[in-house]
Amino acid sequence: MRVNGQKVRSILITSANKGEGKTFFCSNFALTCSQFQQKTLVIDTDFYSPKMSRENLATGAEGLSNVLIGDATLDEAVMPLNEYLDFLPVGVIPPNPLELIKTQGLEDLLKEALEKYEMVIFDCPPVNIFTDARVFASLCDLGILVVSSGKTTEDDILTAKNFLEKSEIKAIGTVLNNVKYNEKKYDYYGY
Ligand SMILES: Nc1ncnc2c1ncn2[C@@H]1O[C@H](COP(=O)(O)OP(=O)(O)OP(=O)(O)O)[C@@H](O)[C@H]1O
Ligand SMILES: [Mg+2]
Image (cartoon, rainbow, N blue to C red; front, side, top):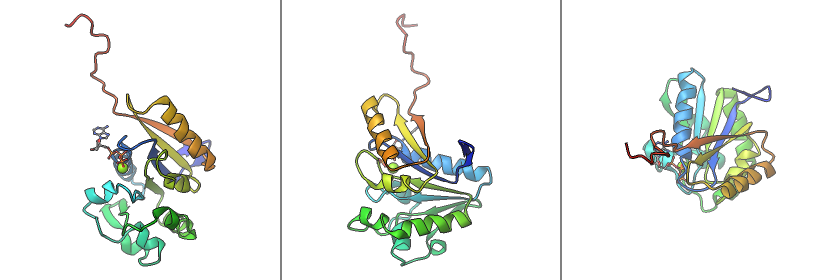
């Protein structure tokens, strides 16, 4: 994947608000990358709603927080999901997640991950509610903003875009989720 001629190797997934399909998209996107035989690492960074960790039965398992505080190595903490896809659960929930991810440890972790994986994907909390996604944004090649059709407002999108831009992210893409293809918008005649 390339953006502005540059190869994209680190991506953060976020959305303006809660429940807009970030984790759903992130899981599917990571799986797709692995099906293209790209060695991929997907990281649950959502300390407030660690759904990807729950879905992979990794609640309480070592993960991101443990690696950041030097309690575990990346290799020790990752769970293989398939031949090309590894998963780093969120780990022990710290009292102040934001302080933890602002440490130098995150840059070191990403650097190590990029030596071992072709693609590193972060499932982040909502950017309009928590500051965390902005920290990841400052390190990633691309931010993907998931927009929930009929739910995310234009103001929400603009606020989210501003937050990501202020973090000096290199590029932003959007994904429209929850589109109802079968909805008959102009079904006045009741056929
Ligand atoms: N396109 C879709 N098709 C079917 N189900 C979906 C789709 N997008 C999201 N969902 C479902 O909607 C619910 C909310 O999605 P998800 O957990 O991915 O949102 P989120 O933005 O990650 O939420 P949170 O802010 O709590 O982390 C989940 O049960 C998910 O499986
Ligand atoms: Mg989520």
